[in-house]
Image (cartoon, rainbow, N blue to C red; front, side, top):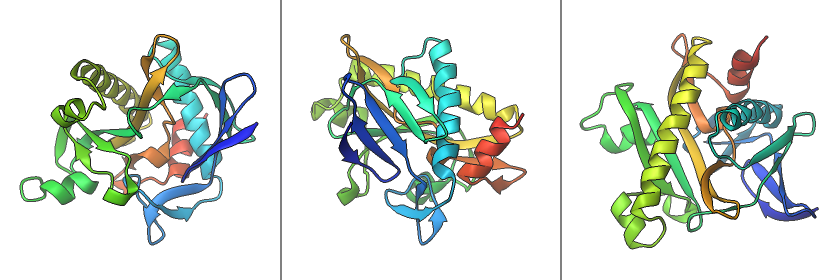
Length: 228
């Protein structure tokens, strides 16, 4: 296999059969040693975070596949922290799509004049550009269409999938009395038909989740969700 991309939390390898292998790392995003799923820099390394993230990703992607929701997932090897996926084409240089149920993080920093911390939000969807140099700026539906990154029709599909998947994750966490505050997804075009599908991962490293008023680390979240 050939290393094709070195990311903050995963490395990507091309396999001989045309699929790809994602190698999950123990690095998580944040700043000054504090975990923050909304950050665009690696803030710390947590031993076991890679496997914990893959366990959750495997759980949710298999659940999505069972329900006919399109993803790039093929299979996973938790022991080796690797996941095999179908090739996917990104929108531009990549988009991140956030679904928010509580006013925290960058939402609160931007709209704190009007929003109260922890205020309930109705599955608010926002799209940001993957652009470290410019701090992953938010972008509107109009701008996505005008810059030829995403058509209005595809934006509608993207938003619908985001809410559908986020609500599924929220429901699963609620079964363990865990509240989802927000979650970040990535999408791409997969297969001959270039179907819009969920890519990357669904893990504690991509969401804020709370239990009994306490923020859960990626490892704590995986342990609580997947406990027997």
